[in-house]
Image (cartoon, rainbow, N blue to C red; front, side):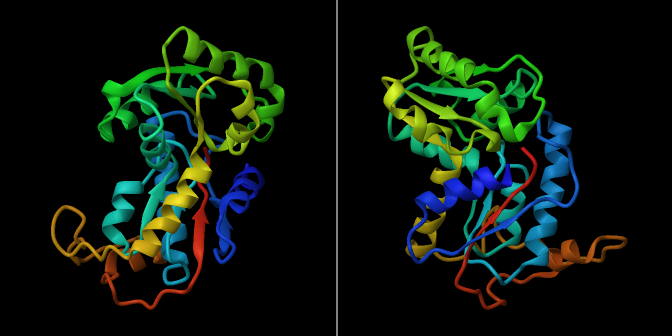
Length: 251
């Protein structure tokens, strides 16, 4: 899955953008539930703390964006999620948005994510695979015909104006389906990379007030050093390297 994400990220990245991948050191094979997303969020935070100062933007490369809002509090660089980026991109391409997912269990969490981003009223459907995944890295090949069928059903039966192929295991599939479907198709990885690049160029400033202002410094105990680094980090205090870093959690 890391290879799929990296290939798509490099296809779309600007020539002067440096992509650095990072795979979670611990977690489940792919995220389907809220609890699994909690594990993914901790993995992302750990990587972000370990590499603090090495990146100009961070992309949480797992659909559902585990840890995204919390990392926006902790960091002073743009933090982008696949779901957030895909939804904002899709919202510019059509009114009713269809999501194609890799499992049934995942759909409740995805619906909550769409609601969190304020686009639930524009959600046409979440269609999904039903068969167990033998290998998340080969979903595109193992279920190619069914994924295409789900896309067509989302358009013809649910009235979707634009489709999102959800989940890191589907990274890059959208570009191969564009000519086979009558509506735009959005990929979370490419959307995330492009939006991260845009936010870096815009230089919109750092949140020093409001809900994304720096969390208060307080005593802590028993935490990993990378997490303590984020807890104690003061926004704007660390020089940034000129890289765009794509952080991967299980998805």
